Length: 183
Image (tube, rainbow, N blue to C red; front, side, top):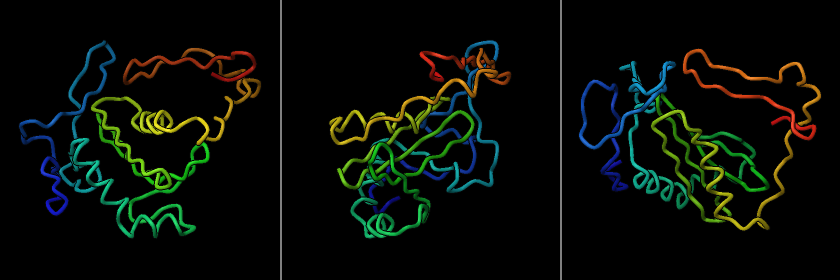
């Protein structure tokens, strides 16, 4: 991290050491409220042990965008390389990577054709990937994007419509039919 000036980024194997200024993950409790999300494994290093800030992750994203690695990845048919995944969203070429541990998740996206870098860091169950995609969509004019796909028809899912509760978190969600579409 040092060569890129990422002074607020560490690879920390566990949650036991208290590090000033570092946010911890949060998980919702079934009875309401929140608890600290724990990284219970001391065996992690790159996968879940990197703790950073949005500013440092933007330094990393900028480094990727300016490196030959990104050009190499975007010009090959491979959808995955060196921890980066290629995909298309609403006609945009994207390269990114996301991850999470109990109580925290993140996603980094680069839109190389538009010189856009987006980082979403969440210390809770918020959908970092969806937040990052929304930020890209909000940054570009609608004319630069393909039309969003419509929701699927609700007909094949008729038997699944209703309210669901996740026992571990107490989170409630609903699958419903609205104008013949699954929402």
